[in-house]
Image (cartoon, rainbow, N blue to C red; front, side, top):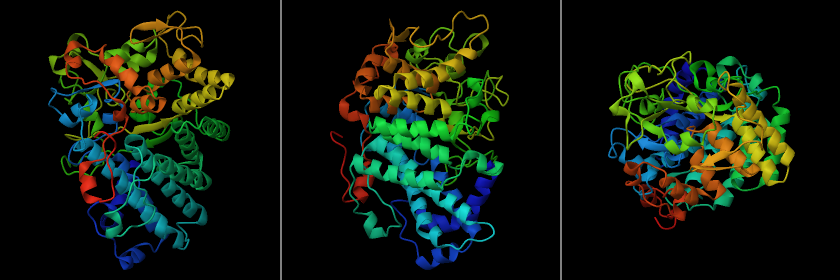
Length: 532
């Protein structure tokens, strides 16, 4: 999806969309006549579906709510960072298990997903009845509908893994229906996700069938990968392995691992051969800082995670700092460590980058310049960057498949998929490194400072952490594995004294975020997660 065109097409449909889908809790039901007047051409349908992607990239409303505040900062991979513990206090609460139902990150994140769902419901209600034309052939129409099913499933997936069971709305709702919608069970939400993804997989195109200006749209491969992921999160390993095998067979010619791991996190590596699905950000020079949802074009993540010092170029805010615990788990000569974690030394060291004894920076999200050789991405203006956010990479798919195979006793399949990921990292090892990253099981790993020979399950989980660190996966992995409490409380003991003094013990109920209190006030049928 060409970055400029996304914004241009969104602008063309903004007036129609705003009154129908921009607020889950505020806007009245749309007038039928207005909508029927809008959905009259293939181009209008294309514009409408393009706008359905936009809530995925929103990161700011009442506060910043990028998903990595949950996926990274709540885990043992990252510490909040910033100027001090009061900087982004909402993230501090999440990180240290002190949050309640008034947490603004949880509130904004929850609302954004439902805005995306409402947009998809609108499209799925009206587009099937629009006649095909020279712009929207039947094949394009089917694909557009498939994109909507994929996106609705993706929004619900983001909700269910963070909050548990949530209200399911599958049509354009009127105002009265919105105010009294009970939560569905987690099981039923996943059933709907599977249903939507199955329909999406049937209708979507392969990545190679898209024109270059449409790269970034949902694909058949993305739907297959998400089907595997959705089954994996439910512990349904037979189905997960089946969908993983189907992806690897059907998509063999569509995706490949980049020769250089670090190339996935440069501007030149956007929508590359390894990318299965990524959020598209725009190079837009007009500042819209503080205007909230609906105005996002670039990403806040770049400035949020860059160095707070000026001695590497433009100053940032220093959030999402990799932990010493993460740094220590990398094996000797693993090139992914330095491609993930920037350790500031010499002329680049600055007291401004020290937060509770931690001076590391997240290199993946904004530390490279355009050619990958420098220290910091430039941003288009005072608050926005242009780097896309990779949500699903082939390496992630391989490791999910390895996990499903291991759970099913398919040792050969698990080891083969694991080795594909390690082999790429091995090939990137420093010149002269002796026996870097050996094949399983010929190596040891360190977990919380304890060195051991891993079981296959432990090796796969270790590899996920090393390969996908700082990409927003870790917290959700720990929760679905059922080890979050054990891991997080053990991790706390490895932190700096300054950080440890701020941390609370994690309790089992905190694997789910609280349902936002403001939503409960608006929805009389909505109930809170236990113990919040």
